[in-house]
Amino acid sequence: MWKFIVRRLFVTFPQILLLSIIVFLMAEMMPGDALTGLIDPNIDPAAIEAQRERLGLNDPWHIKYADWVSGLVQGDLGQSFRFKMPVSDLVGQRLLNTFWLSVATLIFTYAIALPLGIISGRWNDTWGDRLITGYTYVGFAAPLFITALVMLWVFGFQLGWFPTGGSVAPGLEPGSWDYFVSKVQHLLLPAFSMAVITTVSTVQYLRSEIIDTKQKDFIITARAKGAPESRVYNRHIFRNSLVPIAAFFGYEITGLIGGSIFVENIYGYPGMGQLFLDSVLLRDFSVVTVVVLIFGIAAILGALISDILLSIIDPRIRIK
Amino acid sequence: METTKVNAELQSQDSTSSPSGLKILWREIVRDKIALISLIFLVLISSFVFGISIILDQDEIVTVDLFAIHEPPGDEFILGTDYGGRDVFGQLIIGTRNSLAIGILVTLIAGFVGILVGLLSGYFGGHVDNALMRLVDFFMVLPTLLMVIVFVTIVPDYSIWAFSLIMAAFLWMGVARLIRSKALAERELDYVQASKTLGSSNLKIMLTQVLPNLTSIIIVTMTLQLAANIGIESGLSFLGFGFPESTPSLGTLISYARNPQTLEFRWWIWVPAAVLILLLMLAVNNVGQALKRATDARQRRG
Image (cartoon, rainbow over all chains, first blue to last red; front, side):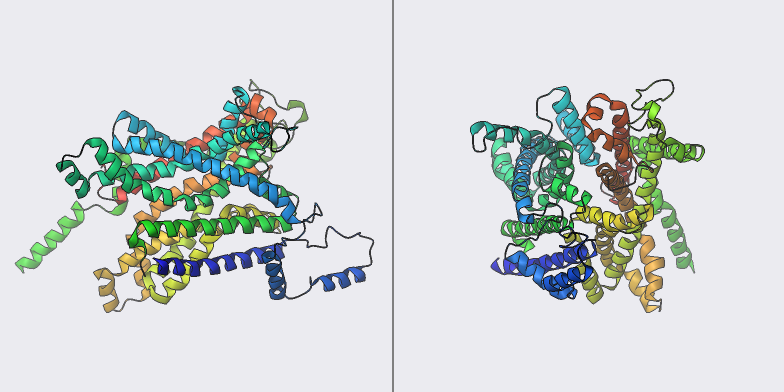
């Protein structure tokens, strides 16, 4: 198994490297650089040119790339053209917000997926199953942004159960209990509306997995030995079907990234997705570059974690 | 003499008793009532929007009229007007047309690239396969949505074509992987070997023999992709990175709901478009799922 993990890591590093090169080249294609927002237009162009030379902005791309990467590794994410502050300061709090949003979404996703998947798999072709299958059918087709909007409309505006924007109510002391409660309240609706959609594939997977396992020989054996129905399900079927689900959570990250862009935009939640959209609109490309890089690395690491977890669970995956 | 005749008979019987791939697909749709209704709905709505938009003048509909801002639905405007006094119903029709058209365009471009890469990779295998699949892996790593948004903003002359090409550039990998796996299986079959022995060129085998055998799979994935692409396009337009306001898509109409006032009090602007997207995606998906069942003999209903 260690062999598999090492081999998998050997794939991961080139992936991250390639991602960084692409992101860098993309940044090169974007208009503007570190000097654009800094200078007074009245300065002599020759002085600007000298400054560019001094900062290494005229170097060939591979040298610039090397500089950029060595900066990144040392934690220097660059300067925001617009806000004239280090990108890391802009990213910090928002990254944390998005992290909590993702955690809450994952919790909801599994909290919805497990009962629904189990009910619809165990009692397949009953009314309950048909209802759940219908939900997954619609949920599979429904775009996230429409779901999130409808949720905001119904629960935020019509019923008024949840706050309709931001990540915390204004005027609360950070660290206090009220602050914490307000944070959670602001999280619930965005996370839930994302989870309603992301959970669909897990429910479908769990259902077909349980139905599949139900017909396996070892279940017939268990029944023949006289095991009670609850034991057959809890010990034999669920254990086999649930474990892969737990390992899939790394792959979910890709979905969460796309989702966070829409959901944060709709709920005005100050996270990475929102920062990305704002920076693109402001043409603040040094920030854009960092956000794309962070999201990309998160997705790569997510896939890595899931692959490793799956290989631990299922030895057949460790081929080659 | 006798035996060849019997053989010929058997063969002709065979060809009548086992229907062609397209026939199977069609039969499955007819048997599945929901899929049939969905297909009829799709045909009706697309002929309606494409037909009526010939008469309808897009420029007239997107012209701002400051005397008719936020009119609720009434006699003059069936579905009221938006913040620019533009007729929502007209925008809905044009938006549906644009969303469908761009969805189909992106699906075709991405499908073409995907099929090409998948077919080459699966048919030749070996080094070609390795190289192409690394390319696919590489594209899979990229955060698609973010990349599309970035490229949409930095591309110099932005047009519908540029938008479709950018979208397609990040959405062809799924098709490529699927076609590759099918082509890999296909090339091991006897007919390919026979054809090779007879001296057919690789190109001919790929295009006239392997590709036709993959038709039903291709139709299925393209249909499911179409649903996804309509969703992605409307999502991008919703965020403001799709069509400009002068070329409304369904997502553009929904994006007006980002204004809380519109979301809460002016349902006529965004609810019809949201419902329409949902219906379109459900319908395309229903058809796609029925087709998918048809390609798997164990799941067929018909």
